[in-house]
Image (cartoon, rainbow, N blue to C red; front, side):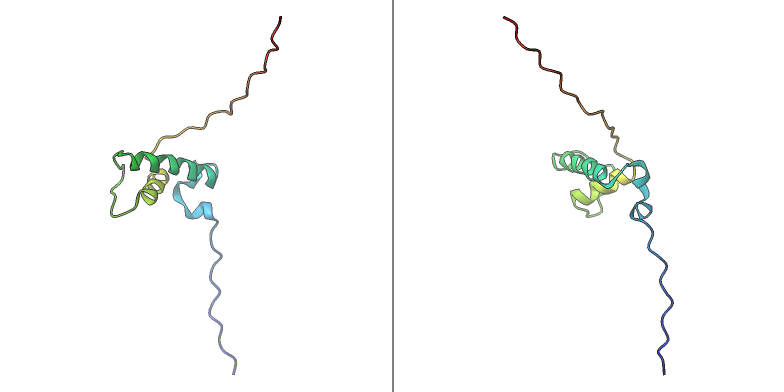
Length: 88
């Protein structure tokens, strides 16, 4: 007798599709950077923008960023000015 195989599970969606707010962030590194800065604010005493519900600061910060309750922006990289040789 051959054992019946269970039906194949559907393919898992891409990570960005599983995270609701990921569409607003360009990549996971930007997401982690924004969440990290929010964690520093929460640990320093900032009021949570979502109900804490026993979440630690790191998880709460990530949830806040994904819920788009935290404003953020990306600045253009700074280009160092050319050094002017001293005359004299």
